Image 1 (spheres, helix red, strand yellow):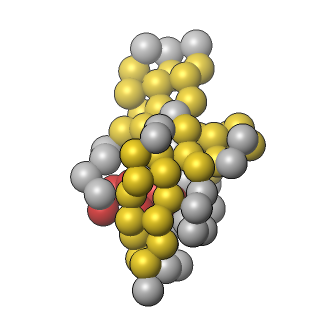
Image 2 (cartoon, rainbow, N blue to C red; image 1 turned 90 degrees about the vertical axis):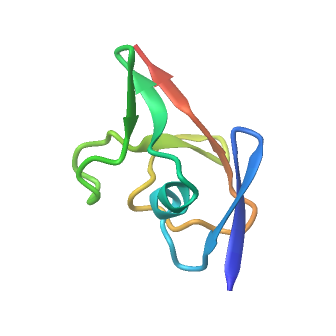
Length: 81
């Protein structure tokens, strides 16, 4: 079964049960956040480093490596100084 999420206005599909990071990585995205002028994506993959945080359904600071992708999720990049 597949799930479809929207990332910065673009529809992205993944497998049911994948994390948001998994969906993003499998769609070819390696980064999805900017911090201190550098591109960030997944680093530790277990929720410790917080490099993968993004906004999901209006909630900021969601760890993409820990949040299961759900049908219809609206995902947005985060930019931090």
